[in-house]
Length: 198
Ligand code: 5GP
Image 1 (spheres, rainbow, N blue to C red):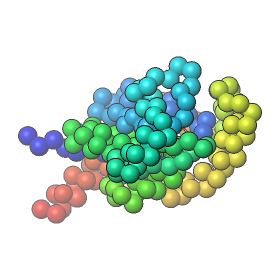
Image 2 (cartoon, helix red, strand yellow):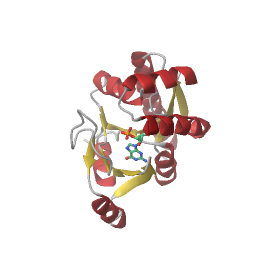
Image 3 (tube, rainbow, N blue to C red):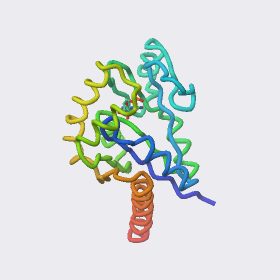
């Protein structure tokens, strides 16, 4: 039987907003939803695992993959390259999985242009003060990278208007449930659209 294609869900938001926790809660809630693992040239943080958090590759390999057209989108963030492997995303969607791309705003705009069926969700903090507190509490940044992330956060938030949906992360489980509701809404309207077309 033909399997219903999954939903491509692009999730962005400023550093420290809790995108990772919200996406992890969504995946725990719904076994049809999974991540696409990105490639990056940045070094692994403590506790991160190659092939799970990212594929950690050299700048040379990254450049070769760009040239080969292997990325659905890619961008430079904080001086490092990040990219979404095209083949993996396609395989998962065709298998009926909803695929989360947790990517920055530059990448999200590329996906919007390349895959109009992708759904873009921007995660907002309850306030800027709360965002500052969350980034500082994470403690994994040097003072330089903390300042870089904070100043970039405001610029990123100005992009929220370009997204299909905006979700405030006051509570992780509530925000994850909202993402699941969006996925189901998109599927329902897609089914309705194909009925209407018949
Ligand atoms: P981090 O270094 O904190 O893991 O990620 C830094 C930023 O890169 C985050 O905003 C994250 O969403 C973004 N990012 C991670 N993977 C990708 C990717 O494959 N493509 C793009 N465009 N951005 C990514």
